Every structure is written in structure tokens, then in C-alpha cells.
Image: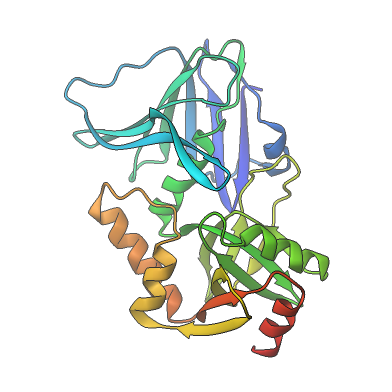
Length: 295
């Protein structure tokens, strides 16, 4: 394809291949997100070849490549992707650690313009412009622009109520999603969600991570910060305590104080209308009953 659009969490992302650039081939996990191209939130123009950053561009953020082995994060390489700033222009440089080809890319993006540019070096005759890690990076900066929240969490909808369970790796997000799934709930996602303020309420949306992901969304009614425990216990938190606990699990790049302040504001406003609690749980059906009994 020379162009296509994706609807992810209500964002319309359009990709267009420039003249002489590779065909665009979305991966399997994105096929269910293909949509019409009316009113895109951002248009990404895809180019072939190497792009050199402007002289004087300053690196403001660097992310190493880290793999988790037996619950322990292990750094595999010092350079993975990085953010660079030159005057009013912003750039992300990245490699593709899961690709079978040696590729690298530069994404030029903007907080004020819906026109972005992506240069991919080593793509061959076709390429997926949302190949990891570009998928998460594009989504993150869309949430930052829109004032939305990208968070490590699982989410379920049970009897028209939406419950979000947030925590770092190993705290039980996938376990919680599986327990609710076995009890007849609809799982929105078990790892990464986008929260958006819609009209007077909030919705959570899944993001395409797995090949069998289907676009999903749900109203958001309660937020739980989860940990494994010796008994099931819900401890409500409010104010700054709730905000800080949620912020700790949000995906964020802390190189720009304005981005941090905008996210903090979004989380603070959300916490005034969505109940937040710490949840200690044992991994069995009883935790679901405990939550439903304490509505």
C-alpha cells in the first residue's frame, strides 16, 4: 500500500509513502485498526534512506534497550532510541531490535503541527511504519499532545462497569485480567492502556500489542493500584497520594517540564472523579467477589 490510516484509541493516524519510498505494510496486530482517512489527528510521511540530524541538535532523552529475564530487567545495549531537539524541531532516532534487517529510523514530530516525517534506512521494498518501538513512541506523543494518559495497566469491563488495574511488571496485571476473563468479563487489555476524557466521563482503550488484539474500549469507573498480598484488601487513596501512585505507572518521557506538568494535570483532574484505591489480592476468584461487594 502507498497509504493507509489506523484508528487506535480514537486517534486517526495516517501514513503516506513519499515518492520513491517503500510500500507500507501494516503488521498483523494492526490490521483490525485500519480505517478510513477522514480527519486524521496526524499524517506521517514515510521516506526511504538515511536522515542526518541538523548540526547542533541536542539529545534530551536516551532510552537503553532493556529485556526482562525472570522478572529482572537487564540492559542489552546503551542506545535504543533517543529524543533530540534542534530549535523548535523534535526528532526521535531509533533502531529496531526485533527486526531481521538492520534498520534505523528518524521520526520528526511536532506538538503544533499534524504533519510528521519518518525516514527509514534499510527498509527494502516494503516496511511497517509502526514497527516496535515506533508504535509506542507515536502513541505516547499523541497522548502527550492531546493531554491523555498512557499507562501500564490491565482493564476489564464487567456488567457495564470498567475497572483498571495498574502496576509495574510482576504486580499481577495479566493475572487479574485472566481472573476476570474466566468470570465472564470483557478484557480490554492486559498490559498497556490509553485513558481519554470523553465528554463528561473517562474511557480506557487498548493498544495493539499482540497479534490477536481487537480494538476495545470501556467506560472507566474505578482505578486500582495492585500488589500481591496475603489477603484481599482495598485501601482507598485520594488527593496527592492517588495522583503520585498513578503517575508512577504512567509511561512518560521526563525531558520536558511542560509534558510532565500536562500529564500531572490530566491525572489530577481524573482523580477528582474516578475513585482510586490500592488493592492487595490473592490470585483467585475471591478477589472479584471482594471488589464487587465493595462497590
